[in-house]
Length: 284
Image (cartoon, rainbow, N blue to C red; front, side):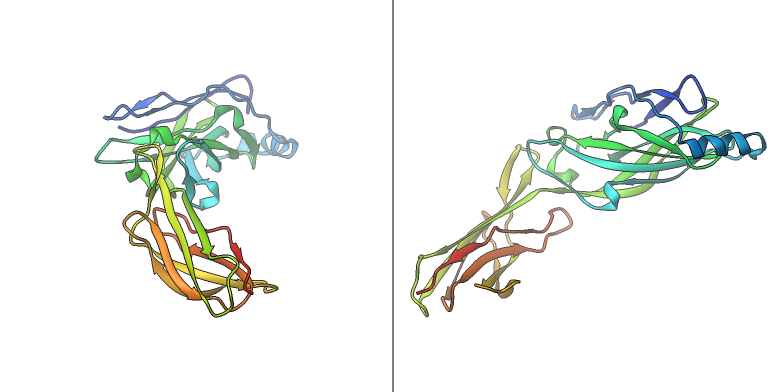
């Protein structure tokens, strides 16, 4: 089903009093809603622009010209906490724009359409000129409403309203990638160790599983084992290790000097890059 945001204009050229996004129900029972109610005020420069050009603005088809969520960067979502990200949206109309708000949605053939709308009270707007307005706000993603196959590209849409109350919008303005938050651990042992002796470096790569609400091992992934000698400013890659079926990592190396060991994962389209907090090893 189509996910639609409706912006209602009230009292005055740029005063918006309500943003209502009806709950959209997917085939598997997933749904989303938006807190109603927000207000915005025009900038002084924007108001002057409207007074100067409003009477002569040419009639034009209303259009959402841009909508960007999280600055276009991927959104990593864990298993428990909601993730709130910013958006910026711009719309233009011959009659002037009262406000515009973005939302994100995904078409998942397995479980139905799913989306998250703007947090109404977070929205602030600025009049660019007589026909154009830019608004900023936030969108909150809740992992409880998501399934693991949702880790992919999401569409970014936007709805706007002219100052005359005409609603318009687009559901394919841009896109944003949503990812499953990842974790990585490391442990180098024995400690301390004599120079030249063998040490074992273990760890585990896990990522959010939205189906179960837990973190599960990420199998068959290439992870770099890196070392930073005491006093050095950066890590150097020693070797590449693959995770097991449970996401576990294990390899051996020779102890050469005091320093810090870590694993580092470059990431995949569905999972963000992550590096383990380093484990310092004392070499005698």
